Image 1 (cartoon, rainbow, N blue to C red):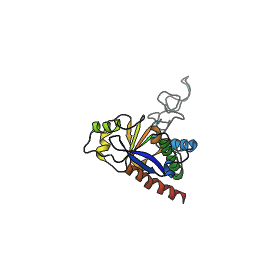
Image 2: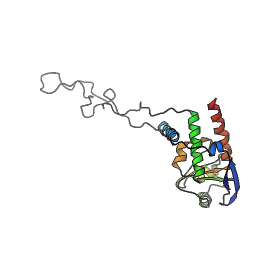
Image 3: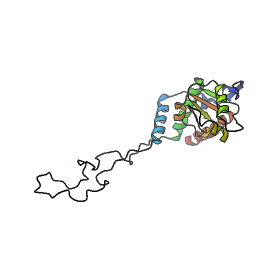
Image 4: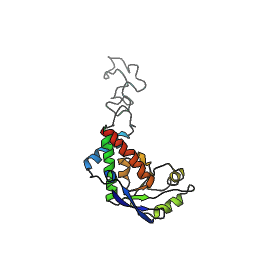
Length: 216
């Protein structure tokens, strides 16, 4: 087991919490982390650019001029790519596929590695609990101001809390994700990870079971 400091919302240490070494104490392999990160970014990429080929543009059904006798070059349609307003040859379209396949076991192991690096670099903060009685950006900012935060923050709770969720929306450089939806990309984009004790339990419950299933 790995011991890490446990804080309350006032920033005071409340002792220590034990973290499973198989999740928070594994050896980091940069190649695997990079592979999973690239796959995640590629799979979430939206295909926006879309051009029309000569069969999709409007007009051009009629031959521009007769084949012979005009002194001009022969043309069959104004939809031709060499005409202004014509179709585009080899242009981008929405049929492109950027997705990359990667198995669940690799994704979970890469997640363990990034979580382990957060522990080693003192970029993981664990709170005994995090609750608000109302929606208050100021109260949430005060709580964060008392914690040893570095850079951008990723807040991850073990259960949904609407007050907390709405209170962090207007705080810059802070994002939030459920503990059972953690991914390598979000962890790498944010310097500090903040979990509550229920979040730690949710990680163990979700990812240790999934890794066991994928190994069978």
